Amino acid sequence: MSERKRFFSYVIPSVLAFALSGVYAIVDGFFVGNSVGDSGLSAINIAYPVVALIQAVGTGFGMGGAVYYSICRAEKKEGEAREFVAATMWLLLASSAVLTVVFCLLTEPVLRLLGTGTGELLSLGKDYLFVISLGTFLQIFGVGLVPLIRNNGGATFAMLTMIAGFITNIVLDWLFVWVYEWSMTGAALATIIGQGVTMAGGFGYLIRKGKLSFRIPFRRFSQKAKSITKIGIAPFGLTLTPNISLILINRFSASYGGEEAIAVYACISYVISVVYLILQGVGDGSQPLMSQYYGEREEKKLRRIRNLAYRFALLLSAAGILLLFAARWNVGTLFGASEEVTRGVAQVFPVFLLAIPFIAVNRITTAGFYATEKTTYAYVLTYAEPAAMLVLLFILPAFGGQMMIWWGTAISRIFAAVLAVVLKRRADRKGMTISAAEERQNV
Image (cartoon, rainbow, N blue to C red):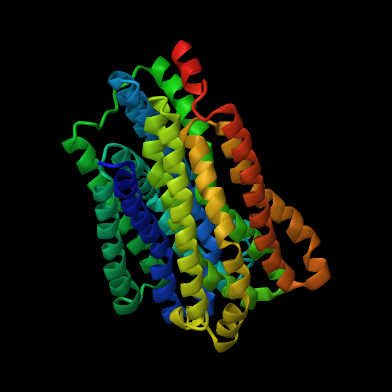
């Protein structure tokens, strides 16, 4: 099979899987928005960063383990590859237990911290978040197993399990929210059960392939856990970054634009987050090949895969911009938003569309770094964007109010992309396959 065909055999299923994970939020927003209205949309939007944090933890550990699994297999170290799978399983299990306890006990303080205030928003948010917290195990394993499946040649199967979970979510949202009228509780139940279906498929695949393992000595577990976490911090951050942005925008919008501005961004974020996840899907879908060629010391092949990822991500960016610009007046209507919110969505959307190609560059560059153990560069790119956004949101709104909050998000993403190009050129000059893997072999 040619490199191009191999690339698309990994990336297309990954893109579709990530797109579906983004549509989970849209489905909840659609059913709740058309049932509860603007307040329901705002409540889910404010609570959603917790959902994203849970899933980011699963993605981080899953991707960290998958990267090392691919590298070890490329180096013909099957025993060590299996130990990385076992360490990943224990990290997913431990993080599930900790986050379940934390968010169940601290539901109300967390929502207040995220900006719900008091009254109806807080009440609706608590209904949603408490159920989500109870389903932490299902969500963390639902997303955490996907990178391991993909790195075992199961990219298409990973996509199918996510489709099964997505269909389950739609059916149960309709049943719980519209038929039984369980409102926010129903939407949350539909989400965690859908993730549970994906988790079950993931476990089934790994068991059938003989790749599921929990057996690892504690001393070796601590070593493997440290390596997995070191890599996983970057994909964790990439998954969470749009929601860090969401938190910042909601907090500053509460001061400058009020509940209407929060509802406007809720509609925008539901839709545009799918585009962000599709772009991450290109990066994460190409990761198994980049890690494999890195382990095999095939630098020319690695660069060709990375360049294919850039071109494909930019093509998808252009398609996303055209589609969303054409549909911008219908987005608010889709979620049952008021006329004022629908108008605001259409007016603000172009600012967010401007940043999409820059996000594509950042996502692919970061994925290339963590796929090849360039962890420092990956960290810098992952967290530069929210850091820049925080600074800009403290400064710009004083000069232009709510509109400058929207522009601050776009400028921070452009800055991150410029930084990505600078770091990529620096890494290329040093050589992408040098010595982290060799140093690890010599330890």
